Length: 319
Image 1: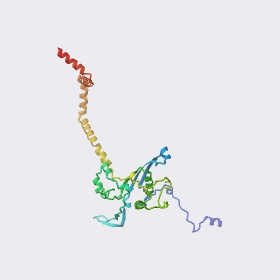
Image 2: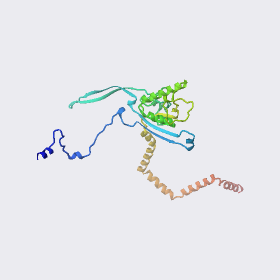
Image 3: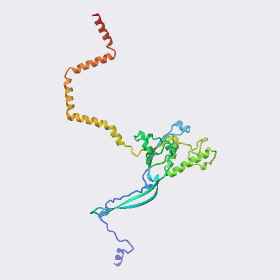
Image 4: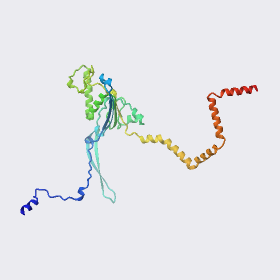
């Protein structure tokens, strides 16, 4: 009997038996707040690439026909550096109420100038003119992407960008740059420019020192270490807002005016009076006369009424 009692009891080291409640079996809700800033899992770029190859192109070792389109969003933390971060408290006192404390987060940041790649330096502001935003606003607005002067170096700004290319080499390089930050992309561009400049002055390199494609086995001849493929690509800053609603309102403004006129004419009885007059005219000889006049004019314009008119004139002269 004692052994059974000792086996049924638990020692202090064991956890006490839990009490199951009926609401423990209900599904629970969890609120997960993803991190912001550089640790955010939010997608900032999407790319679509289409390539095709022909039989003769494959036999002669020609590059495939490729088109690539990427939409990139640059966030504020990528083009700014935080200098100070603190909180301020403001106490609001109102008569008859408890004081209310308002906590404000203050972040002091400085802009970081990362130059755009070569395909982004050729932008002339025509996209803003196409979408209805004046080009002078885009040039003078310092917070807008591509707000630098036409002859000045342009830098990355927070906003949306559109990248398009017809080169498969540019697409491969762009995919490699998707794993790099803006600072790392700037360093990569400087490295390419420095290697090409050294090559132009007669410097030679071993194959192991250059970052080349493993499948690039064809003979390129006397070409620089990093050929310039930016001329087959373009990088455009997108406007902050496309203002589609304003454009639709301007386009449909005449339609609303016409509908208002029709509504007023129906409510005033003008449409009913017009229908009554058309019905009354249909039972008179005026529609038949109008039809005869139109038929005769068509007959004369087709050239069949000249002889008849000349014959009638001759008979008149003889008489």
